[in-house]
Length: 590
Ligand code: PEP
Ligand code: MG
Image (cartoon, rainbow, N blue to C red; front, top):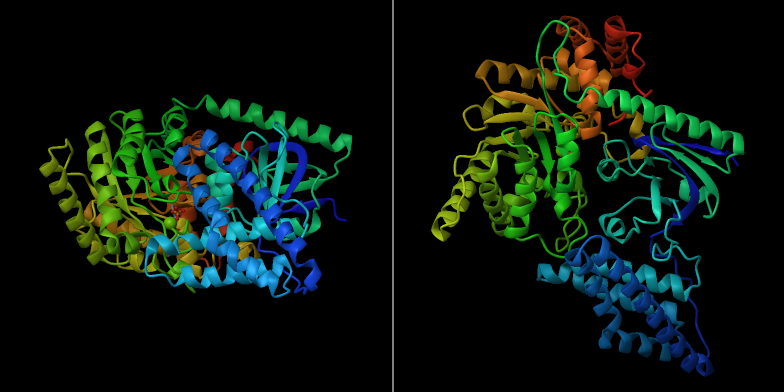
């Protein structure tokens, strides 16, 4: 077997540890008929299995409560209720009495339940579909005696490398953070949400390995190198030694970069840029402050919802936003309203869609769910009392959405005023430019949007029609394609003409080569992962805007992404060819 699996670097860091394979998929159930005499024993086996499954769920629940909080742990109560449901148990027993093996009987019953819940009129009931899948996996794996993939029982401090197909929100909450040191997935790309979350949690990760779950059994010793995007299986002692040396070198380079924390992001030709941080979890606020960022350019609030059974209420959200806003004093903190629904952190309770990326998500969902949206807006208006908070709307395609959102913002302010709760009503409302429609028609937002923030992850996905989470086409996800560059340029021009601030907060801004291109396109505000702040600062201080502009002008006129990349590479090398930090890939700390 090839000992080196190559994927996509998602979150830096090197971990040497045992592989833990987690196959969290509904297993195939072979149909099996039993004799009349075997019926009683089969029913007893079914009950014993239910006991074991409940026992495990209680363990997972207790750990989730300890590590993530009581609210997150509640997700498992629903699953426990299902396992205790008298009707369900009676139905399975009835089918066993008709000579079906326990696993066949259980599978049929779960299919009926799934069918029933998926079509239920109440969102609360539809929300149970995800829980049913988890229960199905847990019970069927036990009934079929499948290898134990349950993430429940990893020894503490196992330093394990979790290998799984994809990391769903429900799996994320189940993870034992004391046992898992790194993540490797078959699916995903650098800009998929598992990668973004791993970077926020500071867990080294490699995604897009495609066949890792098929090639590994579990228990093998491996080295995961998150910066290089590789997973080495059964390494030799010399190889382990080599990785330790590389790890030390990375630490030394990070320490050197950290010295730039208080330096100004000013180019060699004296142009000052604004460098802000992206924050995905409120806990990251301190790291963002220490990175030397001029505030927060994007807080992704949807991570507050990961793995929850219910949306966080106004008070809880207020506290989370206040924490980030107050950490930054007078610096701006841009908080984005929920970008949930569709494929992106699907909220329970809504039917799954055939085309989730083009579906009911982000601002579309918020405008249709005034209860959820106004709760968030009230929390934001209250948190705005503690600093320079600004609100940003995701996935906007039309000015109507901005007007509608503004009307709801005014309603939220009126509700707070009526309750006599301190708040600010004049909070700036900006939009993300992350669809080709918004970029081409950026002028249609003039007078309605207080600022633009270009989300290059989605903008690239929608412009090139390349799924940002699909490992099979990851090499086609090329933000330097002239089509994408021209949309960014168009947005910058509209901003400059009408005095609207334009930031880039997609992953492009965190990578030196691409950040150089963005500066050349006229972008003066970048929002990057906290760990990338010093790296991008180093880039800014080593280049001239003049050189970046020359390279970007040539790239805009290129005929392909590869040609544009070559032009940008050349331009960057001319500015700072000798700097080991700025050669893409050598040390990408974002
Ligand atoms: C983007 O699309 O570039 C962006 C910043 O938002 P997200 O990655 O959360 O979709
Ligand atoms: Mg986006």
